[in-house]
Image 1 (cartoon, rainbow, N blue to C red):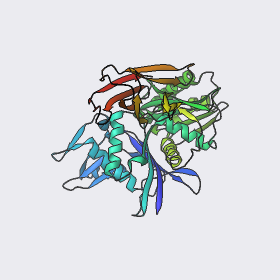
Image 2 (image 1 turned 30 degrees about the horizontal axis):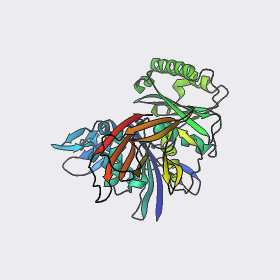
Image 3 (image 1 turned 180 degrees about the horizontal axis):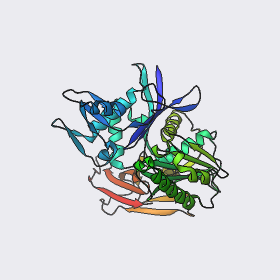
Image 4 (image 1 turned 45 degrees about the vertical axis):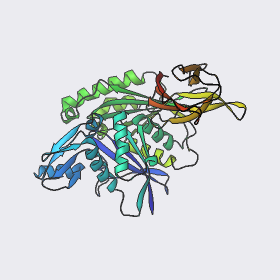
Length: 419
């Protein structure tokens, strides 16, 4: 049986898929068809007229041009907005459409019944909770274990791509320019000094200077585009010590138009241009999830990761100890803790927040005044900690009572904290 660790980059214009190759310890791109150049797969669907038959990517374009169906595009934006599309008088939800697209995408690599996905990491430009929920539901409908599905930002996929090509060791700072029809994005990886374990930070900026790639078809447009990206590089890189520069996205598939930009970024630096960077980074993350111990012993701080550790001081078997609720560098979407406590005359719950790079710990409290007054050690509480964003924590406290003697009041408290 073939066990696959897959990384899938989902964008409105193009999607890409990579797998981790255990023999070569590398991530490899999956192309649509026999031509390895076609690893950029258009994120579109086409339904064949009068039949429940669907096509994706270039096949979708081909059948639509032949008048055999209608193109459905902007699937990721539709998913973020929980939108719908009507085809042949039937309304399809974003979930149904995304399931069809991703199912066809994964079928490109699942060759036979003996193939199975053991880890699947989606990477997206922006971590929208609605989209993330939808991707998990798509996995359910495709019969992929929920524990096998993870969703990360492009920032995180970029960090793991760079680390994996440096022997899993952080080295000098690097940056990435991503130019596509959907925008112009800048990423930077840097090490946070004097932290143990080592902290690696990923910074992302969506640039206002984005432009339509159509202008690259004309000489005057190419000159304008070169001027724009040069100005951005000068502003963003400035006097920073950056040793490696990565270029990706449809806009950098050809670089003849960006001669002045290349001259600038190549001065004293290594420059790499290519597609599938985010999908390959996601594939490395997928492989790492199969390991008992991570091959990347660092705290990664980037979009999708929390920058604070959360602890509670509790008494267990007569000894005071620190109960870890969440650790800095954890994926906020997957970080959740469910704790049961018996309180002893306390009228509030306290927990401590320690943010990386910020001295000291901050104490947060949740008042228990709304719960019934009971004798000491006869109130059992359930505490649920869940993140609703990188810096937003929800704490839910539920009165579970104390057996038949003090039944539950069925009251609960819910509070939100900004970390």
